Length: 216
Image (cartoon, rainbow, N blue to C red; front, top):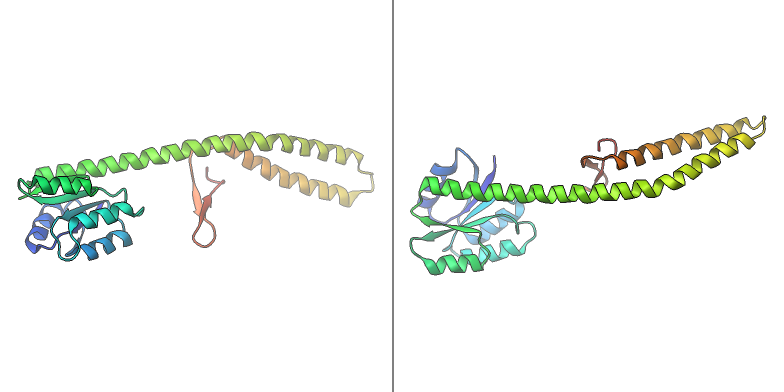
């Protein structure tokens, strides 16, 4: 379930929104602008329903701050406005809002607007992931090409070293075999990079992630 953050100080409006949306979405509610900003930054929601008139920080400033922060910049914001308040709508769009909904709410229109923006955000995310995969694929092919040449040379040199090793060089032959085995691992990774069709990640150190070459 997608999560929607509702920033609205009216308990009546909160109850109305809950009645309309609670069966389809996870809802988080805050009563003022400062609390709404804190909640959005702590756990960015899928979408924000934002009242214009709030105690303390008004909705316009809330929207501006959220759109300036990279954690919430792409989260759709739908302003809750009064009927016929054209000036409110214009100021909302200038602050970075994606849409508006007029009170009193029509449940069908509210659901449709929310669904449209959530679907649009999913499509944008998918497009970004596809572009990342394309870039990684191109990088993988380039790396594979650049590594294949020195690998081929190393295998050739190992072959020559094995032929020139004296009959009593048992220990040296063992070391050459160990080097060959390690190079085979490198060649396997290069081949995986060249044929990678998806991105797989695994945990690394200090919360960082890295590509899992065993799973690509």
